[in-house]
Length: 104
View 1 (spheres, one colour):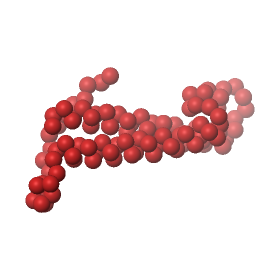
View 2 (spheres, helix red, strand yellow; view 1 turned 30 degrees about the vertical axis):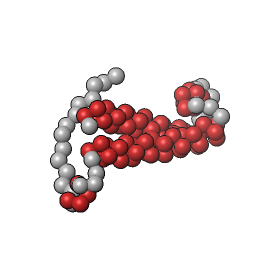
View 3 (cartoon, rainbow, N blue to C red; view 1 turned 120 degrees about the vertical axis):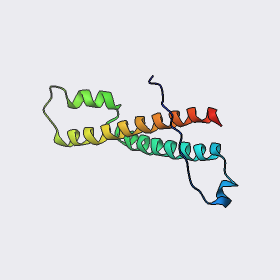
View 4 (cartoon, rainbow, N blue to C red; view 1 turned 60 degrees about the vertical axis):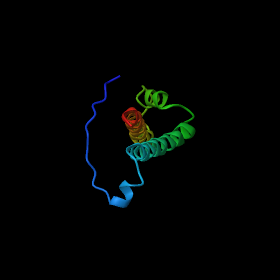
């Protein structure tokens, strides 16, 4: 697994908010956002798993196989792959944000 590089940032927030929120809470909010995005993409690719009754890799092998092309399946493959990639990317961001928690 690739090591995460951290950078420090500064935020300007209204004084009354700064008094009521901690850095840990801000990271938690960002984690919630990342998890929400990952779950969204997962729900989208699960629809394709149900539609075709198989996982993405199996479906890709079927579509790219020697059988005659079905253009609607190619369209679904492209969309499905985007959902798979989106899910992986947001899961990665979630895990990276979890790593930030050790600093608070």
